[in-house]
Length: 148
Image: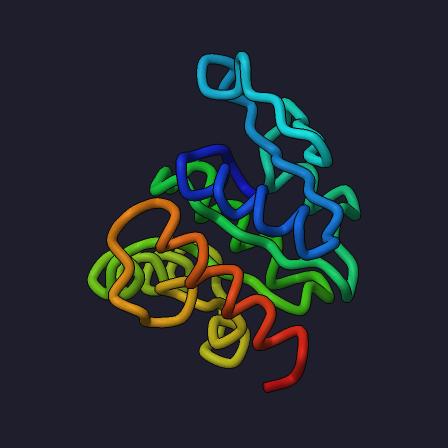
């Protein structure tokens, strides 16, 4: 997971319950201090660095859930260069459109590569709370993992 947030915490909990290895990368000590969850490893590095150093494989889902472009956008730029089976970033339709435009402009990514990014992330269930959003996110990860 690219960054820690309330939605990321729920996603991490659900992902552990689903049997996934969960690694949260976030260099923001003020955010990660005191966070501890059984089955979740926290690394104090930029998610993009972790990804660029080989942190992803074909069984990886990259979830950017912070609303912080420095974390989310950079993670997406690196994630699309990997074999990750799921790549997604949280945000409204408007925010997601702006992100895709930014990634095309600053990252030089073409439309085929950008189509790998699920943005907005998750199934459209009308979710409002962090827990509801996390359910929608993990349901979409499961859908893609199962080839549905």
